[in-house]
Structure formats: structure tokens, C-alpha cells
Amino acid sequence: MSRRLINRNSTLLSRESTASNNDYAYIDYSQPPKNRTPSVSNTSNMTAYGHIPGEPVECLSIAVELRKEEITDSAGNLAWRVGFRIGGGIDQDPTRAPYKYPDSGIYITHIDLDSPAERTGLRKHDKILQVNGNDFTMLTHDKAVKYIKQYPVLQMLIARATIPPISLH
Image 1 (cartoon, one colour):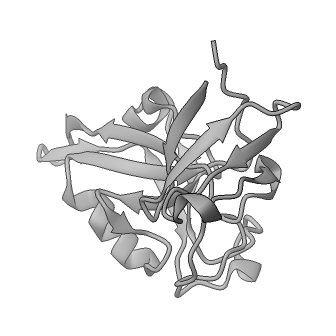
Image 2 (cartoon, rainbow, N blue to C red):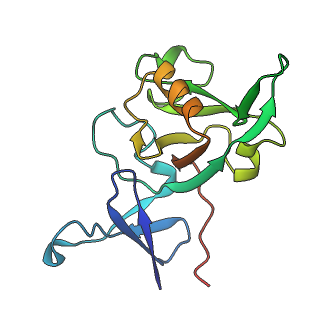
């Protein structure tokens, strides 16, 4: 049995069972059938971590739908709570950041307890690849914050440094 996966470039990928649960074979269906050759890579070496902005990246990504919750702030104004903070951006130097991320991507740096982010399954250090179809690998920090605040529902693609094995049964 194989599963279909979509990476951040909307390339259809197939995860097929291999000898080890930590190894994944990916088939790029954008190539003509005679040129399709599976390549095996370990998810601990995902190219989403440490990739160069603007360059293509192929990785296992997790689709997440986050629905913000409506709250009233201390001034009595209506606000939307997302429940996470971000760090990074193409305008930031990752070597000077508190967390030593390998690139200038947008990363989740904090998850509030009992928040929409926590209930959705987001984790600290997840890398945000895309939100509502918008590429987050090429954004400044401020643009990422503004974009996240703009919408009550966030359709996100994230990369995680460690992915638990997917059960095929």
C-alpha cells in the first residue's frame, strides 16, 4: 500500500513501505513514468531544514488546519488567538537567534498551553513552509507575523525534524 503526500511545491509524492520504518522511498510523479526512480532518504535529513530560500525543497510535510479562537483582550476588544510565536525570516541572521536553526526559515518558537496551536498538534521548532498557499520560506519575520494575523483559519504545511513512523494498517 502506498500513501500520497504533497510537498510544499505541490509535487505529488508516494511513501512506500521499506525495510526500516525510518527510511522512506519517494517517487516524484512530475517526471515521465520511464524516468521515475525512487530515492531513499531518512527523515532526519530532511532538506527543509538548512535549505536555501528560493531553491526547490522536497520533504515530507504535514498539513495542519488551525482555526483561531475568538477572545476579548484586556481592553475589551475582539481578537483572534492563534497560540504560537514565531522566529526567523529571510531578514534574520539564524546564527544570532536564541535557537540555532540551520536556515532563515520561519519556525514556531513557543506554543501556548490549551491554545488552538496546541490542540491542532503544532510543536515548538516546527518549520512553517506554507500558510494558505503562501510560501513562507521566502518571507521576512514581519511579513510572516502580519500574514498569520490576517486570517481566522490557517491552512499550513509544516516540516518537523522528527516524524513518527506512519502506520500502513
